[in-house]
Image 1 (tube, rainbow, N blue to C red):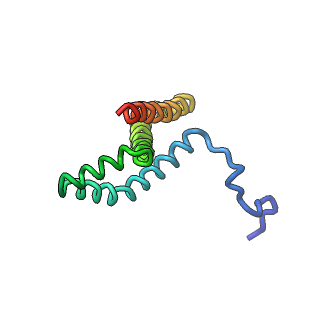
Image 2 (image 1 turned 90 degrees about the vertical axis):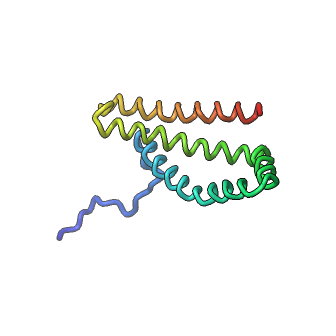
Image 3 (image 1 turned 120 degrees about the vertical axis):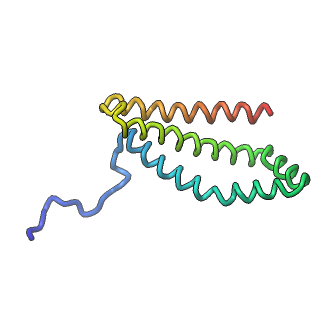
Length: 128
């Protein structure tokens, strides 16, 4: 085997520029992992809130605090981002929007849709 003199010594991940579809794909995986890791916590909160009315009141009060609302918005963003990315990936799998320009547009639309959902949820939470 000959040595390739043009090989890089190291790969600088900060200098690699991914297209918007690549960033969306990575976020799809990251939000999926986040949602799976969040599931035991969500089930615990649900179980605790169903135990008695006092626990439900405590949990509802915490979720309406500023920290709770921010946590809810983060969870809504993760779910919305994962859902919109998943819809886009399913459409690409069946051949809808697989040209380069359309795929780029669909990626931006997935980001915009999840952002819109988070803004709408934030407005509803802060007006509650």
